[in-house]
Figure (cartoon, rainbow, N blue to C red):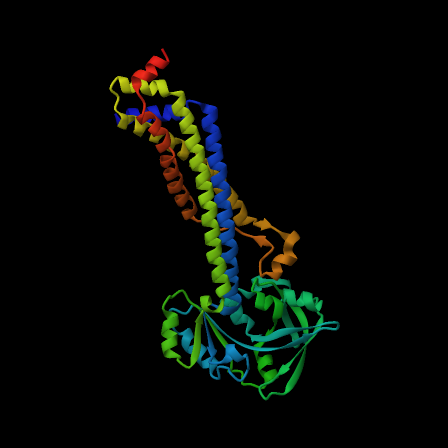
Length: 403
């Protein structure tokens, strides 16, 4: 009996071929666009988070107490090199870097802008987060006076490769110091703080400029996938602020949450469209076959079998749309994952918000499994209203009306 029901449902689902095909195309196109948008938005936020982790905070960062509040070089980690070596021996630590940062004023030939001078070890930064990936122009062959500047800072100061920039700030003895640099590379990290303020150069030169030992650092950044490492370090280094990526970048965490909410709203709208589409087709299909159902009931065909048949019809239509939507969605995601969505015409505006001008999508199996469950659920729910029409049917009246 079950096999007969499936065969009848499959035949009747596509009995009106043009109507069924239009519904399948509608479901498929809606799902394909929805899945591609979901992957694109998630890819955008994940890319921003990944680049911020790689270029700045890591998964965990350590600071001296009061440093982040007062932003003063005297609140630094004095034995940072030894601490970094100790942490690097931990199995859960994937990579670690130490940095020295001081705030001041950057000046070009025509403009001045608040900025941060950051001393780093570029070899360690390459291991930590593939720093070379952030280079938009130039290279890391800095020479004696070379530096790397953020893309927005370069724009604000009208800097180009080999341009001169002077950085002025207080050293560890509260004396005003100035240092001349020549721009050797321009970076775009999508981290607003770095892109709009950063001048990066070798850590030993910044230490000399500030009059502090080379073993001193203002930040120790750590890459690790171990969830409880932060709690372990908090207990071990109680005199330091041990902060996670989420603690340091609440705006990106909030952006990820907002993206998830937006995707959920889009998903709900598309599923409602699927529900209405299947409902309309099934309702019209039942009205077209109302005499058929009346005769079946008059011959003793039980209502529960009609209900199962109608549900299977809706499921076949929904599955057809899902298969088409999966093909469309995967092809769109694959294209966006490889080539991205090029928004170069809006590059200036997007860079000011810390976004890349080319957005790449992510591909996740969950996009398709969630869509499958939702489409099947929408298909089943859509037949309840049409089924009420059959349940209230009086077979005798139907046969008489068509006699």
